[in-house]
Image (tube, rainbow, N blue to C red; front, top):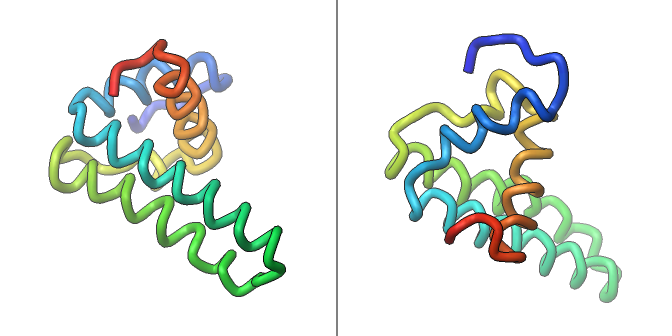
Length: 101
């Protein structure tokens, strides 16, 4: 993933190719779901310090999937914005059944 991308649509197929292992995708999904839970609790309860956990939880699960299952480097290091967008598009695709868990 060292190439330059003109837009997210060009990036996303390569992003998906870096997420072939089902366990990696599952860990991404769990991390993203937990981010939504923590964000919701923080907003409802007004416990703003919980927001500090968001990147740790979100990236922690995703990066574990890459390091232990995909054995590749997360796209976050080279394409942080597109990678974050890819995480949420893949989450939505898994939630709607478009992409396998």
